[in-house]
Image (cartoon, rainbow, N blue to C red; front, side, top):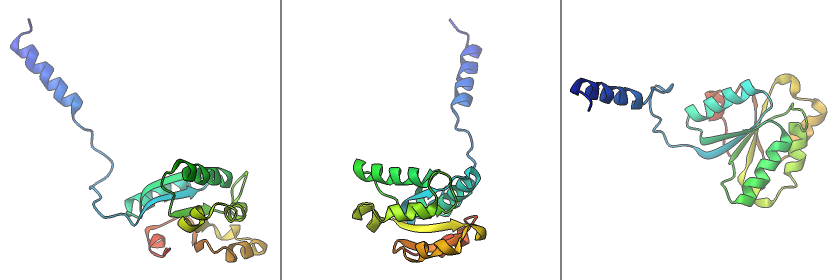
Length: 163
């Protein structure tokens, strides 16, 4: 049989151990989201982190998925369509990536099923030096491209996007 003090000490430990730890957010975001889901196609982990934080903290989107190459992005879109999950309404696309860059992604995007092309709009995230003049035509010719923004993504940049 435990003494009264041991019983009280055990209860205190249980309360302390089960208390929620404070989160990094300073307040609960109650603002409605502009979009349900976006996809970030980017190979740089720091740029992904920055973009995701800006997108979520500004209530631009409820969910921010990411993939590290154009090829992985295309596979994600096809799988999402096949599984019946919600497609991203906006794709943030880096131009310079290994395996399949943003230009190649745009060429392949045109071949995807119509449901994907009607749902997803593309925003280019680029450094000034990655805008190759001979490839700018690919960007201009894409009916799915809505904006070209400079890295890093900012809350002000998000305000410029209209799909």
